[in-house]
Image (cartoon, rainbow, N blue to C red; front, side, top):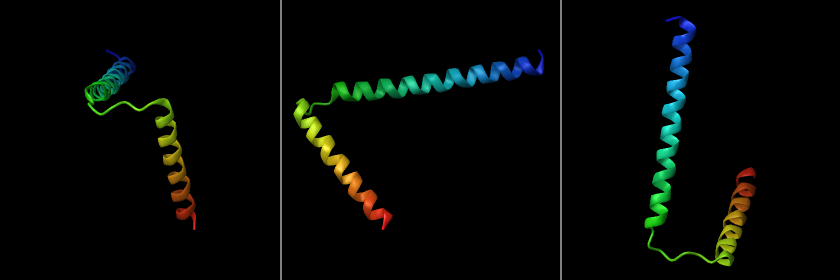
Length: 66
């Protein structure tokens, strides 16, 4: 087998492995989410939580810049 073919096969195998790893990570996160017994947030609660998070990140960013 030529060197170019060997390289192509190695790249293909690495990509397949990386894709499988990403898929396993996604499956784990989905399973963890489905198994979570905590109550779901309403859309308004989720939005408020995200707003609080973003404000805290902005504040931390401003403090780090000084």
